[in-house]
Image 1 (tube, rainbow, N blue to C red):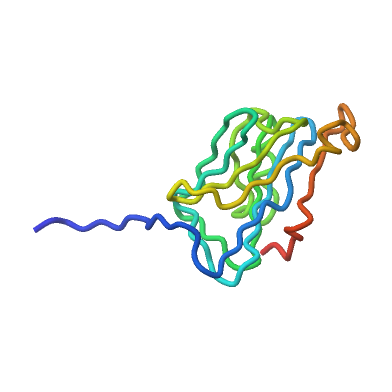
Image 2: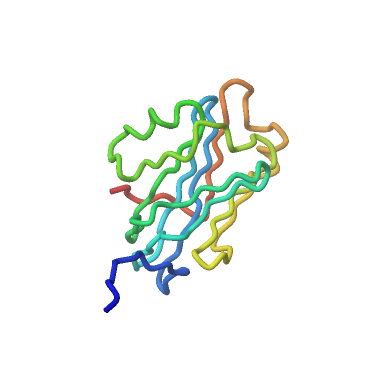
Length: 153
């Protein structure tokens, strides 16, 4: 008889889920991206991947992460990423890497489901990419107007 072990289930986007990239922030040594579930159903994130197209960096979400409806999670990068993971509530502050991954000019974030299908993408707006709103040394923040943040748990 074969021994059974529990394994997380890989899932594409669940019906009733609407994942959105809410914000990409590059503040010098601290960077983060916020992913929001704007839907009405929970989304298991096992097998999901976040990518930056400019640098080709990949972040694999933890197998046990489930984004509940209206929940937001921030994925931190940059030299101060580990410091940001201590911000409450800690379970919604994930550390990607201590490298800088987001380019201040013309970068794009892409969220792929567990089947490798693009679920959401968001590019830095041309006005910001052309230097309109980013100030050297002070970082930049880009908010996606179609993903207005809700209450974080």
